[in-house]
Amino acid sequence: MILATQIAIGAMQYRSLDSFWRLSGDYPYAVIKGEILSLLAYNHVGMRRAGDIDILTDRFTLSKIESELKYCGFTNRDNRYARLFCLSASHQLLPYKKVIGAVSVNIDINFDLFWGEYTGKRIDISEFLSDTIKMDIYGCTIKTLPPLKAIVQLILHHYKEMNSIYHLAGHNCINYNMFKDVYYLWKNNQEAISLEKLYAISSEYEIIPIIFYVLYFTNWIFKDTELQKYVDAFRTQEGESLLDYYGLAEKERKPWKVDFQTRLEADNLYEFIEDDLTEADIEKLERNRKIFG
Image (cartoon, rainbow, N blue to C red; front, side, top):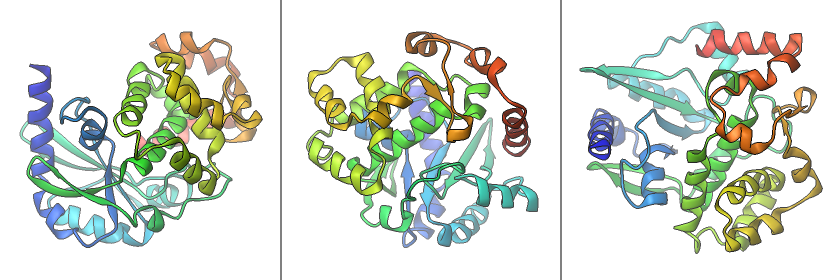
């Protein structure tokens, strides 16, 4: 019953964008996570909770993607201040929405794989989207990332969720399902996501400590001897130093007061970090809440 409901909602969401998929076929973009991840990780649509449709594109294509969404009846609550903030300090725009019956279809447009505070080497999104593949979702032909880049995107997303004070304060952003997605995406695509291939692309993008961080906790749960080989290969002193800390920027990084098991099972992570937040942290948290709600 739950699967049937998920599929029904997913089909409605994707088909509501039928004109967008046809109009945007020549643009550089990829649908990420969501139903794409259901197929790549679990070989079936509807295996993950129906949520937003996430689109990754480059900054040069943002206005074109937005124009096509508006043509399809989607709107967002953009204003000059919010847009400047998103473009300068975030990785995404405010969501586009369209209400169909009792369901709100939400579209998140991402233009970066990292976060505003990131100071390392940036990934060229145009290059990242250069080898997208086509996939049929509910009768709609869409473009998405090949498995190797899909797991890179997913791991970067999870690292951000697990370390962002905004996310730690707002929702249960460390949970079993996020690691389950990583595990089965890897397990069901091991040829495409071989150790050699994943290490090579991670080295190119200079993200080996981040990949280690997420793979470490994934295998902490699943205890797979093959995945352990990846963990060992990606292990660095920098990666290990991240394991018991949170915070996306080095200046805001703080040690966890509870172990990973407690974090994984907690319903409210904010109670574990609230007393450690500085005035600057709280100001940043309130600013993000004001923009993104």
